[in-house]
Length: 283
Image (tube, rainbow, N blue to C red):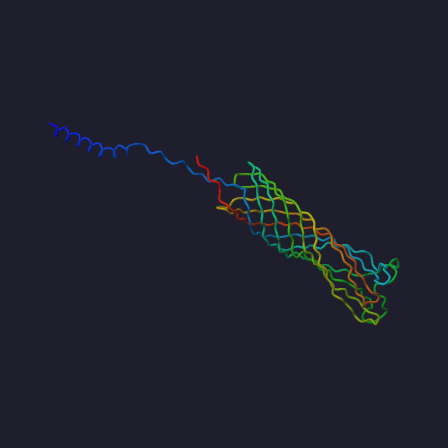
């Protein structure tokens, strides 16, 4: 009797163990919470850019007798178009607060912007005193002294703040502004005639580092992963450059005084790599 009871209990335990996995398989399994990547602009970034620039140099130039200081010719005004390509890189940091993004950015650019003009020393009347070229014969007869005038924005950099609003979570429309600095080279050749009516000339040049200001606007959007692309336009006022090269061997000795007010419009596109991954949100 006791043996039969023990056999019955053993068979019941074995049946329970065999059935348990099947019952567990029929129970509903709770799915893990979904993982969602949330893009954030709150990061450091570096990038490259390239584009085109339309510079403008409003230049005035005047010829003087370098010995007496007398003005030999009326002041001439011209506009040089300093157009060319630009290429460079940028580094920056953003801070995000809801749909608003605040940031700082610095960039450095190589520039191929350049233009040229020609200034001629002419004396239309006696009001300017000594003639530009008082020669009565020889190769200088009827030939006015001149100077070529070449100007180039060789490089520039900007240091700006940025403020923008999110059009979508991954697209930022922003305005920007701050300081600008540029390397400007101005050069040329003054040509005239000396006291024995022989041609004479001298090459001249001047390098200037100019500080100014910059404003602009742009659109930046996520391309995928940690990469964004942007397009922006900038307006820069780079102040003025001036100089007074001299041709001491001419008759009379010539001095050419010039002043250039330089502005620039830049349109460029670029890409940025943002350090740090997206925020992972679990629901």
